[in-house]
Length: 230
Image (tube, rainbow, N blue to C red; front, side):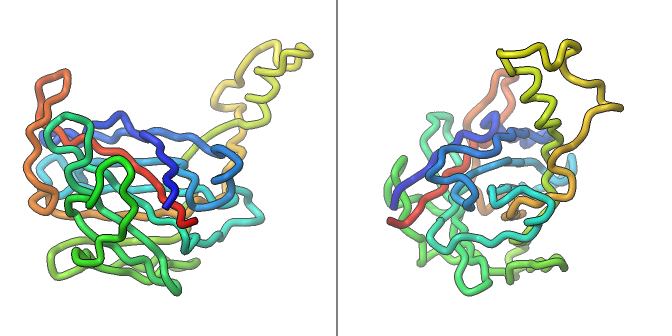
């Protein structure tokens, strides 16, 4: 398995407050562009301030164009949510998702067989499965309280792509005023979708973190990788 790695989040999920950490990066290297090996966005948060659950949402690049609103998950791509419990930035547990025949199968959280360059499906640690959604969202809740979703979702990344290109164009003075104010900017990706994987599960399944952040709060460190079968 060849791995495309993106540390797509500010790494920490506070256990003591409801916070959302967001990173957006669309269209990576040509080898992953326009496939679900390309990580676009990663969100990790507690659903409510007093929740004992954590939600992970991974947006994978498909074709983010309005006339190509519904993409597919590539069956040769394994998505991993990596979780570091002790602060050494080495994954102690992973959650995996891989599609087969319109079903997204989830595995973990469990220790990977190899850190850093894992990619072996944790078939002995099934977490659950859900039918991949189309125009109508389908969710699944397992007996252990795990909620699962996989399918197209509205791209959350607001970006005036054409004005951005005008601003950075070194050849001509095409955007003398710089970026447009919010009331005049255009969301280029409005109406377009990414392919989304969402998992909400009890913190008790993730393990007890001992890592702390700069504020001295106990956190999970987490990031996303994708693995493509060669």
